[in-house]
Length: 445
Image 1: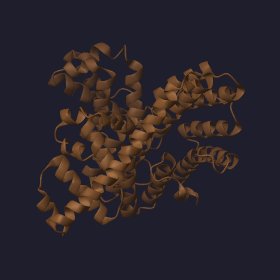
Image 2 (image 1 turned 90 degrees about the horizontal axis):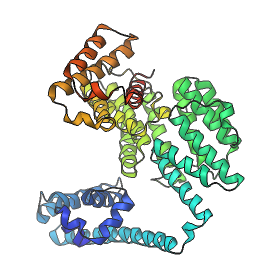
Image 3 (image 1 turned 135 degrees about the vertical axis):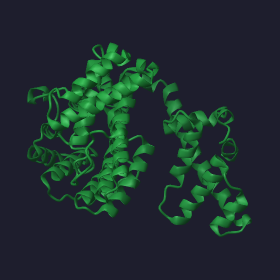
Image 4 (image 1 turned 180 degrees about the vertical axis):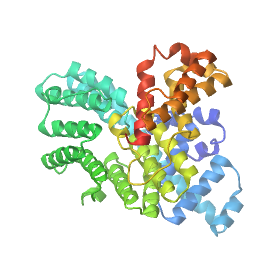
């Protein structure tokens, strides 16, 4: 690891090291420098001041090279020899973490080589693991595709029930309507969870609370699905304006697990609803950092929403807009209707999203992924599309079906003759979905 840290400023040399391929796969980051930095931040993820200062010193010395070791030692208040000793111990901790990643990769490889994954049970278990990982990272479209594979390879009643639950969960998140008949063949607890999500989207907070509480009571104490039910209970309480506390066993969960971070994020949302700006900001900053590092985009979006509300509560409109834009970026990467519902509605008056350049830019960046032909637009064509996004937002906020500004914006897009004017009809569904998700999240409607 000492050699890897020396190459942190040379991405090509760093990428040539065999260990970096395993680290990139384990951290799910393609850039080797960013993956190595993520390892350093993971190993030294502690609120203790001395640990934070040592981590920052390593990042400054090996990644940014902005100061010398002597300057870092002086900044830490130790001699250069003491700093070198502490740095060596830190590198040893990083190497131990990397060794664990190598051992895990070797066990996976041995399992594949043994042929266990080629049996029916191995294939289904591999798909199940992939679905759980996609769900934790809020990859909704991926969840839907994997659920189809699970249904295809399910060979018994238990496997088919899990596959049906997976398909229904992905469908509800994507906004593909399901009624009680669509939930046939799944467990009672899963049916209640899905009904709670549907009720949340429909604006029936009381039903969400009732269904989610019933599901949590039905699930076994060791079942991690209970924490998804608790998360829905929390959201219902926010809408109803009632208090909520995480379950007493939540602090015993693994710190970086989805379930633990979800409970901490919901606690931050309730602190913001109680106008405890300082406490909410401190907790949401922690959960956002952890969620982004782990790839939990839904929790990252909710944490950004809390930071948006705390900034608005302190009358810092610019920071509030920036946090909202970042939350919308995370949201649009998930395409999750459940996540979008009341995302920013946690108890504060927030700046409107109309004419918010950062909000429009976040939606525009996502449209570039939906419609990559727009990357070749000129400045006038890009400005026309951004103006159209702002006009659509204003029309939705003010309840106008076709106002004067929206009419002018549509005409401007047509006259600019850009990619949006030519491909919007063909890509109508994903464009509409992106606009709907962002506006529903920002306005709470």
